[in-house]
Image (cartoon, rainbow, N blue to C red):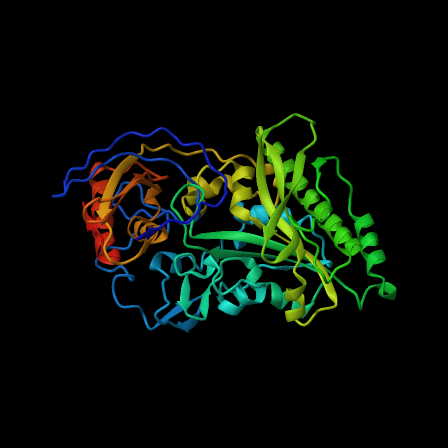
Length: 497
């Protein structure tokens, strides 16, 4: 049985035109071959092909002979100079492991680092302490339990999360460090930027590794002047700069059913914390989109338009999403809310109240620099990286990304019968990534049916091959496709049709 996962709402780039590409080696059962489409996700561009132009993207594709997921799992693995014991929960591919040392958010003049720098400028020291070097390996307690994720939450599944062992994983969000920072109470606020890891689909806006920023602002009832929490929050709110954006916020500060007030907080406390949160994030978004406008050479003085939308997140209540009116549509930018008091209680700081937010750095960088495909962030091609040289030191040099080449697409189909082994869609995506790397632009389910007599289920996927750096030959594409098909059979036990 194949289980499909819902597609998260993320930036969708317009699909480019595609052309068919014929395969030279036809399988006995026959395979369809077809085209390609662009999509952003998050990772490195691999290209281990023989070419006059040397590949500048990271690791080489995993061959079907050496794929770590088709042989016995290693007893230990080393990540950032630390060694970890594995067990039968281990599901981290060599493709993902190779990226744990890249830390794009720390590479000067990289679009992800520049985006982080712009956001950090809105949250001044010493109120906000900055953390950018937390290790990506965390415990299941840190990643899930400390945040109130129930035991049966789908995010805990091996199909969604990269596990080193049953109690250790690659963090799926920066919130894995939240309880620790609340417990340390080193400053009234903090910002975390880090690489995070999730098994996901293959397209231009999803990648198994991407970067998040999380921020929080805390007030301690025992440390505010005269113990007057309300007055302290009001004073901090008055100190925030004003802006001239158009803000739509039609809903009440909380709602009993849709966006409930926590029992630990008074209505006035939650309202003021929410107001401070919203003003802070409005200022942040205003800063980001001021740079977006300047980079695009926009002359319009029309103020930025934003709106607040009620939302649900397991670790905040009430919760909101902030959307920006951009290029004639509402674009979701971030999620936020008043932190669940139980998280603070469990961290041993029950006297505190705070707000928190999270934002995807690649998503903002794609807007800021007009980067059309998330794979580009992992490129080490100087034609990409050179366009951002010097921007960290002088943001006036920030300009939209200029594509250095547009290579033709080539699509091919693969159809298979599912065996007795249950298959998740992300299992298929992992095989494609491990074998083909960033040569694949996207993978789409094309067809599925159940045989009326045998009850066997058939799936057909369209694999869209397009390198961001050069034109693939038909021979190379056929080789990738054949290796990928063999690995599907070996790893997932499917029968190619």
